[in-house]
Image (cartoon, rainbow, N blue to C red; front, top):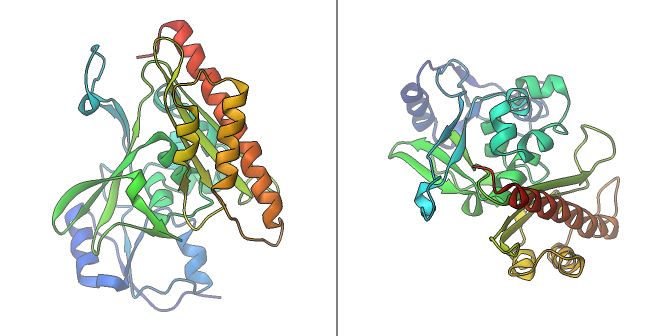
Length: 309
């Protein structure tokens, strides 16, 4: 099939792009990497009347750090972030030494996103804005407690990952708004992350995804834990109950099993062509346990080393 007719806009600045989106209203869509949108256009699952190609806009493909947050006693506002421009290619982030240092779970999860040719073209911001519940990057953003910057008619604002994903392929971006940057909290102190998924084969959409982040205090007890799941709900799903179970514990096996059970209890996946619901629910427990064990082990390594700043 071929796309329904649309008007093609290729602005050279963010201001021009925002004007085009504002004029298009609900009929406008942003084209970045196109690895998800173009197939949807071809199958007429999406039929915008205006397509705004943002690839000519400079300055939206940076990968950098922002903030310091290294002095003892600094607050939440002083956190250090890995800032990734919306047009940064997935393959670039996957191979970034800065990303590997600040947020090592990102290269890990990106290695299973599609295949190298799709990652060469696919963008970080496009994947997150697409909000596919089976997308690895949205799940990682949620597990790390990151946020996005969006620009629109009323200026620039930030949306936390907890508030970003509201339904199937749906975010809380408003009319005329465009995602411009993604902000991932950089590893600091005794923090570790873990990632696990099962798919029919490498590069396919997963049956289930789990991504975890764990922070330890000076005594080795879990000061905070976040677990996010993918492919088992209508959106990337945070499981607060798992973090509640682990809080204050030393991440021993009984607590990890209880947290995995809490994750399993939090989902009600549907049957798919390749995996029944019961199997996918079972996978959630297995993968949540794996991701949490990885996160605790890596956080313990950082604690032993005296923390990574």
